[in-house]
Image (tube, helix red, strand yellow):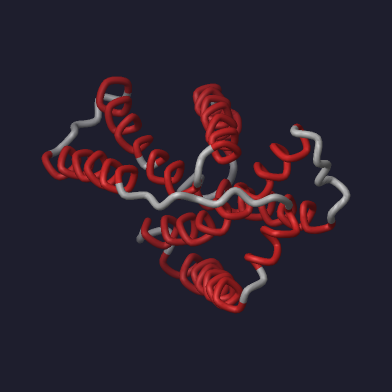
Length: 193
C-alpha cells in the first residue's frame, strides 16, 4: 500500500487483520459507552504492545531496545493516566454533549485539527508521504483525536437510547455519527498507506 494502489485488498491476511481490528474497535466503542474517554484512549495505546509482540512472533521482526523502551513507556503512561484520571460527568443527552462541542474553545481546537489535517493530507502527504511515515501517522493521530470525541458522543447516544431516552431524533446525534464515519474513513485510508 505504501507504493500506491489497493492491491492489499486481495490479501487474505490483510482481511484477517482488518476483521480482528474491527472486532477490537467495536469493543473499544462499547468501552466508550461505559467508561470515560480519558481512560479508554490510553488503554488503546496498549495495543501497540500487543502489535509489537505479535510482530515479533508472527512476522519474525526483531524487537529492539528502543521498541522495548517504547512498550514500557506505554505501560507506565497508561498506568499514570488511569490512576490520576478525573471523574467524568455523564451527560444526560446528546444535546448536552452538543453544547460542550460548540463551546468556542473546542471549536478552535476542532478548526485547528482540521486545518492541520488538511495541510498534512493536501500538501505534505503528496510530497513527503512516500519517504516519511510520520506524515501518515500525523494525519491518523490528529483525525483520531476528533474520532475519539465523536465516537464517545455516539456511544453515549446509544447508551441513553438503550436506557429508554431515545436520542435518534436529535440532529446532533446524526452529526456525531457523520463526523465519526468521515474520521474513521480518513484514518483507514491513511493507515493503509
